[in-house]
Length: 157
Image (cartoon, rainbow, N blue to C red; front, side):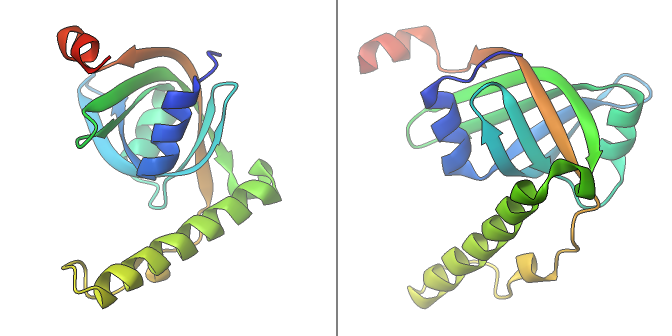
């Protein structure tokens, strides 16, 4: 497992969701947006997947996974590569389920504030209608790739 540096851990916390890529039965890449539930600096990331469909089937067949996270405004991003385990919700521990509940509450609160400010967004609160997770994706990071182009990185310093 590869330890996450502070920049990567903070970016993951700031974004709240990531693009997760897995391999399907034919070896083609499948990408989907998943919510981040918790991050352990030692290199473990807990992801929310509610619907037991393609990502779930792909990971049962092949545990290879990558996560892409970026912040367009700051022009930074990372691809994290590793292996994933599927864990039943009751096996991940109460602190992880509490983290999921806190994330849902936070998303609803942020949406309400933005709606009050008049910012256009989803008129409902879809997070409130999400089913309780039956399982979590637990990723162990083996490699990190900095996606910022090197010439731009040096100019920013």
